[in-house]
Each structure stands twice: as C-alpha cells, then as structure tokens.
Amino acid sequence: MAGGVVRLPSPAIITPVVPTPPCMAASEAPPLPGAPTAGEPITEAEAIERLRQSHDASQQYYGAWWLGRMRSQHPEAVPLLRFALRQRKPRDPGAGVEENAVARNAARALGKLAPAAQAAIPDLLATLDDDDHGLREAAARALGELKAEAAVAILCRCLASGPEGAGALEPGTPRLQEPCEAMLEALGDIGVAGPEVLAVVEPFVGHERPLIRSAAARTLLQLSGEARWAEVLLGLLEHPQLQVRRAALMDLGGAGWRPALGAIERTLAENSLKLIALRGLVEQGRGEPGEAALLACMDALL
Image (cartoon, rainbow, N blue to C red; front, side, top):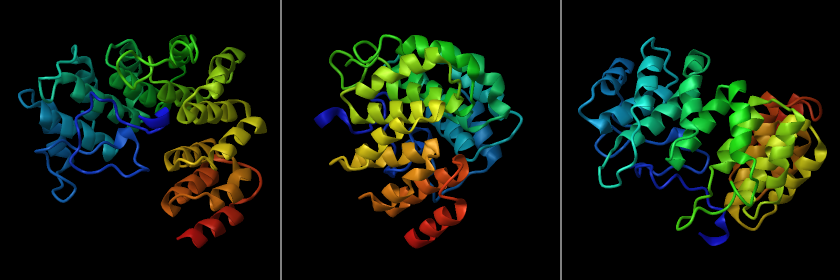
C-alpha cells in the first residue's frame, strides 16, 4: 500500500456488492452478496427476523447492517445486536460469512443506536481485547459514537505504546498493531480531555501515515481547542494524495474548527465532501465565522 495512506476496511470484512463512496464510513458497509440491495428494501420487522434467526449468517449480517443504517429504535434491536456481538469466534477465513462478520456489523450498528445502545457499552468494551483487528476497530468507533467515558482508560492502554508499538505494522500485513485511527478518533469523540489522554494521543501526530497524523490532530483539537493542532490538519489539506485531503476535510469538520472555512473551500476535493465538512463546522463548531458565512459557502458549493 503506497505510503500507507489509503483507508481500507479490515481484510476480515466481507467485500460488499456496492462500491463504498469515499465519504461513507466503515460503519456504513453495504450488505453482502445475496442480500437485498438498495433497490430491494426490506422492513424493520424483516431486519429483526433476519438477525434473530441463526441458520444463515449472511442474513444476520444484513439484518445487523440494516438496523444500524436506519437507526432503528425497535425494542428488540439492541438486545439482538448485543447477542450477535457476543457470538464472535476465532476467525476462519474459509468459513464464508462467519460469526465475526456478523459481530463486526453488530458493533457498527450499536454505535448508531445511541442513546438506546448505552446498555451495550460493556459488550463493546470487552470486544476491545478481541484478536480480530476489524472487530476492535468497529467496537472503538461504536464506543466513540456512544461517548462511552468508560472506554477512555482501555483505549489509552491500547495506544500507550505509541507509534513504535500500537502504531507499528503487524507482521505480514498492511495493518497496524492496533486500529489506531479508530481508537484516536473515539477518544476525541468521547471528549475526556485529561492530561493523561493528551499525553497518549500527541505522539501519534508524528506517525508516518498521514491518516494517523490527521486522526491524532483532530482528537487533540477536539480535546484541547489549541490552534496548533488545526494547523496540522490545514497542512494535510494540501497533501498530494486525495485520500489524505479527504480525511483532513472530515477531521476538520468533525472537530468543528470554523476558522478552516476558507481552506476547506479551496481544497482540491469533491464538493460533496466539502459540504459534509462544512456541515460539521455548523453543527459542532462555535465562534467565527458565523453560521451565515458557513451556510453561504455551502449554498455556493451546491
């Protein structure tokens, strides 16, 4: 992987039938082959039944995805997703749609179902020690979406060895030892800004992979509000690789750094992603430029 900067789903995730747009997170992974596509919608009741049955993992996979994608508030959604998450087993690459594929989608879905999914936080915390890299990544993102303060100490422990440990390559794979990008972003989304958290995150601003640098700078900006971390992200908006510029756009939007308005507008990237970043400035940010200027820029990009 040239430069190590391309966001890829974990190799353990089943390849979707629909190409994932650049602005779609891993948590929005499309359904598996054989499941209905976007042109063949199902109902919430059908999604619940697919997840409840136990003889067809591909249908469970699709049911879990549907419940998260549609932000289901069905009373059975969270209990069934928690049960699916607990069914994880050691991965068997030859097993087709195996239990961990369902568990990964269950973790992603639980992150989308706040506040109803608060009860799943202990299950997600337990998953952070799983051998499956992709499952740890999905759990970390879900805990960030749930703003689970109970996860802070565990996430810091996972990242404590820094770029040379957690951020080092896993032998024989393009993956890092830990899903650092997801874990760093989760700490920022949870929002506990203690000095011990900042001390764990800051070394990753020097990581060799630009996407990890971007995630670390975003988290530090969210937690400290210091403009120096925004400067790291603004510099990445000029990176020669489009994927890095895309990530920096999303991270500035996620941090709500409104002074980035002009730089976002000038970035060589898709207008659709600029709009997502600007929406983040409107929803997450405070101060100047005000909402009138942000909305005017969004109108100009439409």
